[in-house]
Image (tube, rainbow, N blue to C red; front, side):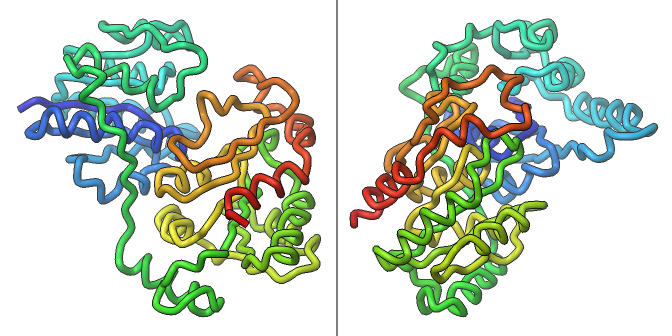
Length: 344
């Protein structure tokens, strides 16, 4: 039996963009054993996926401190013990390359790119796609050495959650008067102000201005999303609003997906919830500052992308503290895009 390892450790959006690789592999090799190495934070995106045989979690918090190196060695050894024969590394980092090499896979496929020396761990290389190729399409090119043609690629982004998740969101949805029995409310719009990198965050006060206009002039119901450590951002939007709003309950990734699925529109920056919405075919207004939507934008139809007037940043500039990229996105432009998406 063929045994295939995908190494895409995180983050949430990156893992979602790699899902078509998994779906294509399962379609081409229905009897194969397919495992995925992923960091704990993004693992819920993959839990319950029927195309996946095994989820191999890397607990990032255990990498810290005096025991971190020993833990990582044990984790690498566990990859070798699983006896994979093929490893695919769309992550293209030193850490992921080391994992591919440590797995002992006889075929290790990565990109012919000098980032962090990752290519040294591979024995088959794929030339990186054109600069403006989306990450989804770039990752799929790693399947070429496996004899999988472009016509065999599968563009599916399955996300799963359980009955308890659905029941929790159904109760919340009904309590807010959004609809009975979990019915989709056509005019519920979610705004999500958070992002891992501060430079990707649009200002909460501007989200509030957009929200107030949509509530007052178009009668939408406004839902404020937030993730770990982001409650203060949600509260800043709330304090800046004059119209009615609801702050979402605390959620994990599965609850968040179940919640986003019910929304009519999501307005957010380049962050995990944006890509969850795109995977669920929920329309978005996506605000892009330092990152390039040609590569990292919401994949598929039905999305409005608003780019900063300042050119995208280099890889390292994205992590700078400062929001001059996002400050260049006008409120009126976002309002106009939202109204158009809503068909109002």
